[in-house]
Length: 273
Image (cartoon, rainbow, N blue to C red; front, side, top):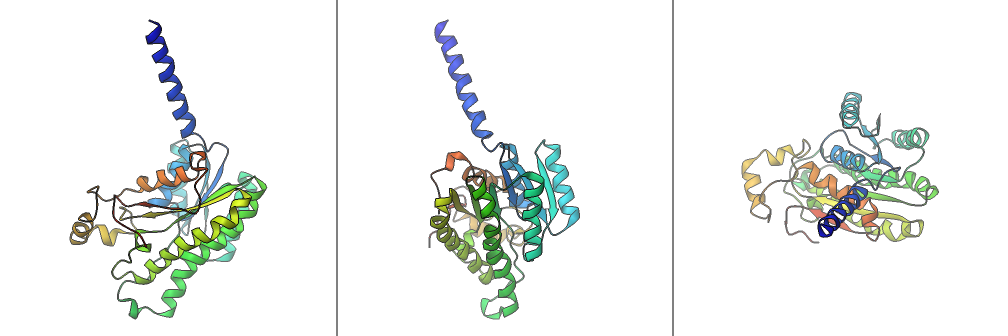
């Protein structure tokens, strides 16, 4: 009888610890850019499920409203707004609104990215490079610069950049985009030591082929998918929640001793610079 009671108490204790771990972002405020579908929405959901108040954004009002309604239906604290991270006034408004309505910023997930070019890299134009680097790299840094003072005022925080497997191994016909994703690996390593003294951790995730609208041109092509699967240990394409959970982990106390790192979420694909 005593053994049974002891086992029951131990099971309850373990379950309690697990629940605490799942809810370890309670009271935190998280900004997630490009967060109305795909990896961004999965990240917002994962952070919200762990107790964070998430701020979602997109360039289109109808997408923001749809994402807010969805997350609210799941009992997640959420605020939404329109934001084009390529515009300085939008970036500033996003941060100001978050501070005014939510009280501060603890977490920043930089997920916004564009790719207006598909083809031989030597055919890419200056305008293509400007667009890709402005949104995929510069905006990621400039948003970080805006949120850091607010994180410092709250005793620290966490920044996660969303890179790509293409940052390690450039994808055919996606040269400029791939280069921008490599830059995020470097930005992570450059920022981490500078922000560590402010108790701000900076990490990165590099997803493989994830089934999102953004990557549909890749995963809807059976020949390309077959070639990718040959390089995978886990013989399936990834889902957005596979990445969202890793992002939430990196923002939690469970990852309090991790900074300057990139976690690849690729199903086991070999990817190193």
